[in-house]
Each structure stands twice: as C-alpha cells, then as structure tokens.
Image (cartoon, rainbow, N blue to C red; front, side, top):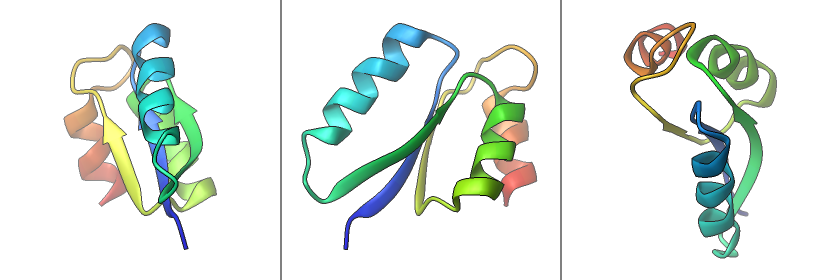
Length: 71
C-alpha cells in the first residue's frame, strides 16, 4: 500500500517539481495539491492523506497555521 501524500506550495513550479519527485517513488501516491494553507486544510479533510508536504510562507494562510489547524 502506497503512502498517500498531499503537496502544498504557493509556487506552481515547486508544486509540480515536488509531485514529480514523489511520483518517481512507487511507494508514494500524490493524492492532491493545494496552493495555500486554507486549501491545504480543505484538501486534508477531503483526501485524508498520510503525509503532507507543506510550504511555510504562503498567501491566505501560512503553513504553520495550517498544520496547527489540521492537527
């Protein structure tokens, strides 16, 4: 069973790059992406990933606040 990952970053370039890196590992399945902390909260609730790769500085809501709310 693959580890389900959610990738969160406000930079579309970095989001795509991280997804590419994670997709190269057959043990990881990227189940979704988000562009800010609020989207991360919404997607985490909807997708229930095992792992979230989270940027810290983002618009709307920063990564630290989002992690606190997700936890």
